[in-house]
Image (tube, rainbow over all chains, first blue to last red; front, side):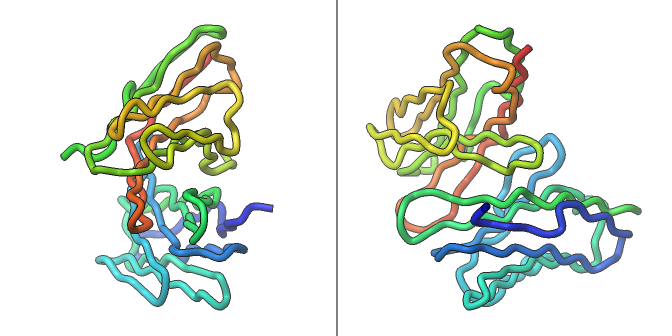
Length: 109
Length: 112
């Protein structure tokens, strides 16, 4: 079983829609990360959070430590948001990250 | 300040050929990582280096070797490439303090 599970695997939305991507994890963590990867591109960090909520522009990330669950929301989605979104966790012990398999988002004009 | 730089960006190898993927960072990262990314499998750790002079196996080390040449550089070597090693390879770095990782742009490797 993967330590990090994401849903959905694939998501298609109309421009302007509100989008939610979910991430659940099964291990104790020091931080949760949301990463973005555009087609053929590198991986960039969107958020790192260990509690509560963070907002950057139209992107919002929340985490519930008790439920071991995080969500990434995109408001007023745009075709340039089309990318793979990856959830990852880092743990208190060890030096490694654990990754979800990613959510492929396509926003149609 | 270039961040994490990987070379090459693209490579095609014939089965049995060898090559080294280079990774360099100028962010004073203590730890560095090599991952491979395959469809439907997410990022899997090949090797990592917690600090200069140390390396450890990750989840999928077979067929690979690494060298942490100095604090800045962490290379990944394929001694005898196989088609199963066709993948996208990412290097990443992280400081001991803080949890944020920084990724390179990836190397798209095809073994024919």
